[in-house]
Image (cartoon, rainbow, N blue to C red; front, side, top):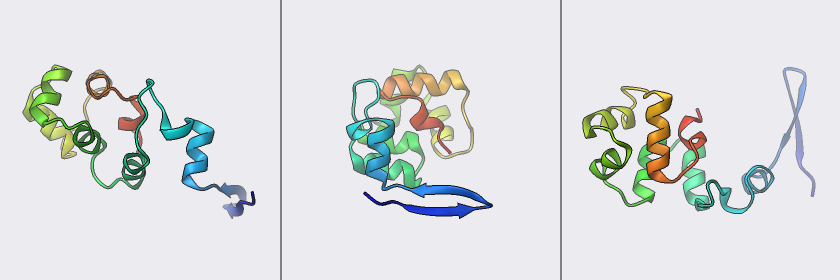
Length: 110
């Protein structure tokens, strides 16, 4: 299969279709913690369609209250993070990732 080669600031880059990149980095379905995420969710995360926590929370069918309880947080604090008003510590993001059964990297990207 042929891929496009780009040069940006003198460095070569290869354009790879997103699904092929996922196969290289994560395996089929972007598997993390033995819990694959559908391509449409991975696409929404990559496109930054919304805050990653909101995308993943809705995908899991959770309310803010349910996620906050599962992560040991207050709902107002979770809301502040989802709206981008607060960043949340690594410990907080790990608790949210664990509550969502996803790898923390999905929350930390970008």
